[in-house]
Amino acid sequence: MAVERQIVPVKTKIDELIDEDSRLTKLIYSYLVSATFWLIFGTLVGLYLAFRFIYPDLGVASWLSFGRLRPIHTNVVFWGWTSLSMIALALYVVPRTSQRPLFSITLARRALYVINVSLIIGVTYLFLGYNNGGQEYREFIWPAMMLFALGVISHALNFYKTIALRNTNEIYISNWYILAAFLWTTVVVVIAYIPWYQNGLGETIIQGFYMHMGVGMWFTPLVLGLTYYFLPMLLNKPIYSYSLGVLAFWTQMVFYSLIGAHHFVFSPVPWWLQTVAIVFSFGMIITLAAGTGNFLLTMKGSFGRLTRSYSLPFILVGVIFYFLASAQGSFEALRSLNALWHFTNYTIAHSHFTMYGFVVFLIWGGIYALLPRLTGREPSHLLIGIHFWFAFLGLMIYVIALSIGGTHQGESWIAQLPFINSVELMVPFWIWRSIGGTFMFLSHIIFAYNLYKMKPQTAEKPAVELAGEQI
Image (cartoon, rainbow, N blue to C red; front, side, top):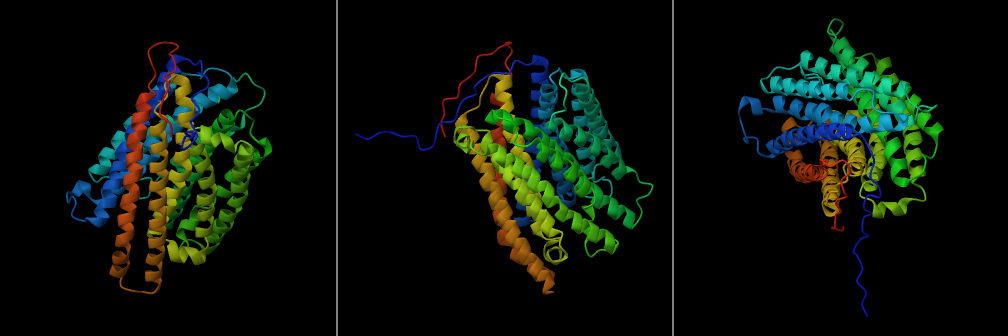
């Protein structure tokens, strides 16, 4: 007699609801709705630009030019989607680990308005052709970015007061990372936008400092701090080593602060500064080993849960890509590899490998771990699975295509072939980039629908809306 078996294991439904202040739940959801709007908008712009590489005449208006749309894509997904979604999760993690309510829900709500206004102003001016001088990731005019900084400072104050008034003796490791991210980023943004000393090479050096610190002192510590909470929560076990977490924290601060100059190897920037950046880039291997090892050792003995959870696969991918993408960046700092890959499409692949494969996958894991438990509403398990695989496969197609194409591009330049040769050889890889980007964008649409299905109900203690689909 034949026995029917599931193709893959059934995902476990949420085991418990979190009894949280409904005002905080609605605020977190508001942050995630805003973040998801910017995700859809920013990646739609990015997908359009990907198709423009294949069809150059697909829109010839000035406001559709690459020079205007590319900074809109990068700044929106940086400061809109990624930043707001991380802040949303931090609004829960910081009070929870401090065992006290958030210091001020009103302040957090106002910060959301301020950050959204900063994004609207920045995007509008970029559409009109006004920017901060074309410096990567700081194209927003200074009034827009100062509003963003005001929002960050508001959260820094809110989280500091919450942690200072905590009902625990120790500061949990998550809060080390989260609070540090807000303090570091405030300093980085202010330094980057003060114009008085940014002349000639000074501006170039500050650009390298800002561009890399934006990733290493904002996105990285903030999302790692969130993971230090959500991973143990999902596994129902403590983090493997508090000491490894502290080691990764301090080495992140020491090494990452001086590696920005590796973006300007072989430039007129002082040779010694380039060398220091290269050496410190490899010092980051200590940070990566401590952080990644800590997460994987926490998962040890619990990998069976991966087949029954819809949150853990996102987190596992994010942890693995944290090590791979960051180590890749360290090797790219070497002068021999920098000569081959810098200024090519390989660097575009690397940036997406890092920001999307590492940061965004960890964010999605946190959202799917938290929101159903706050609202009592689960999205379709089938749609979560489709979201995961579309995003993962799309990213792999994107990264592999541009990595191979970018390598050929660099070889063409080193061989001193006509520049048009490097353009022509990239065409098939740009087609694959568009295919991968399409899968990624479709996954974002599915995620937006899943977010809608997790919308808080009006009842104080809603019944769990069970999802019957299986993946």
